[in-house]
Length: 157
Image 1 (cartoon, rainbow, N blue to C red):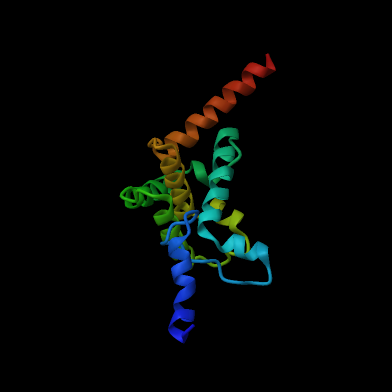
Image 2: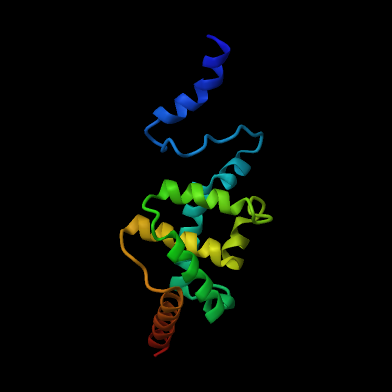
């Protein structure tokens, strides 16, 4: 093999795999497999989606999620993300966005609680997965909280 063939081999292998889109970066080798997983935006968004759905359904999100300012910021970012039509493109964008967020690799669970941008990316991830548009952030969170309160009241009877 020539030096050019060796240099280009990983890029060609990434482009031909069927399990991952060609636009995704190959994971960088590291001695810590957990760190590699945490740094993969595709995986981070998937984990965020599970956490977000559960937190909203159970009404366990941080109090700031119910503030009007937080909801406005989430919906603003969601409008910017609306033209994105694939999860791989969304993950690539999130990966670039999260580079500007201190501590995302160390504690991604904190990012979802603190960042309206991370919440907006996660909501868009859920929309792309289901194919359905979700309501505005505050409408979704407050209606879920109301139904949780109703279920709690019903079970207390």
